[in-house]
Image 1 (spheres, rainbow, N blue to C red):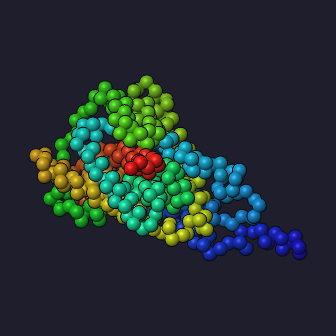
Image 2 (cartoon, helix red, strand yellow):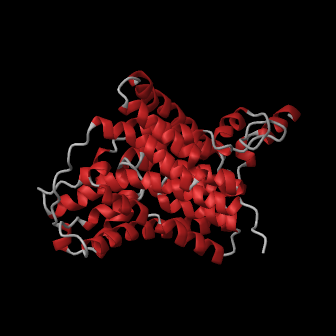
Amino acid sequence: MEILDKFLDTTGLVNLEYTNALMIVIGAAFIALAIIKHYEPLLLLPIGFGVIVGNIPTTEGMSLSVYDPNSVLSYIYFGVSQGVFPPLIFLGIGAMTDFSTMLSNPKLILLGAAAQLGVFITFLGALYLGFTPEQSGAIGIIGGADGPTSIFLSAKLAPELLGAIAIAAYSYMALVPVIQPPIMKLLTTREERLIHMKPPRVVSRRERMIFPVAAFLICTLIAPGALVLLGMLFFGNLLKESCVTERLAATARTAMIDIVTILLGFSVGTSTQADRFLQEQSLMIFGLGALSFAIATAGGVLFAKFMNLFLTEKINPLIGAAGVSAVPDSARVVQIVGHQEDPHNFLLMHAMAPNVAGVIGSAVAAGVLWAVLTSPAVPS
């Protein structure tokens, strides 16, 4: 009986708190959304199962949690906490991204920049709510709708908030089809949603090869803090566009990015232990994340309307919503909303221009925040 009592005291059922049970339900909900609604299943399913794993109570003295030194999960989580996984994700994204539509109509890059408005407004909002400048910068980047960038910046500026920021960023990325359409329809008229755009011009191979090198130099000279993320993004794109390293490009955009996505999603999920995650700060982060995402979407749409005041060849303001860097989901949402108004209006390729520009913009915004918030104070 003594052995039986000791065994019962070590079981998860005995040590399970109601907060752990709540997090397990949240993890199951993520899995359900991934399977039933197909909301970013490649992300939500690993994260959801990771949430369940991370909230199973363990016996004291057993190194099992991501927060226990030398545990297996802590070694996997190292790629998140030290910012190793996000650049590898960017390498794969670069190897699968075609910048041709952006190069064919460079003015659409401005829409990707305008969508970063959500980042800086949310930064100010987080400061107002009492977060430190470093924490505010990490929270603000959620507005870029770029999970890897959010993880990378929070690992550098606010590691104590990494779990909440990562879950918020990926949750809102998955909910792009739910959040964006109402904002897009509210801010545009039916006449604007019916605007047709000319097919993009054909971009030469030389342009596509020069772009990653030139863009990397320009962006990192402006924001050196974005060097790692943009370096991997444009390196992956050069592997693709050079046409002489197809094996490397294929590996980066398939096997490698799939492996890293599995490890990143699962380990982020396991980091959401109830005692660390269910706090007032986490709820405020989720609220600010929703605000930043809405502002970023509105910023892109409104800036497109502003540009039309000066353009003779109008652009469809819906594509401004694709300025958030949820690739390619936000571009796909633009196509769906435009198609609802006119089945013969094809906006997907046009929307990909601000979409990929948003990836670059969010990385630049992260680099600027990292540099400003970690630089020593300028003497008076």
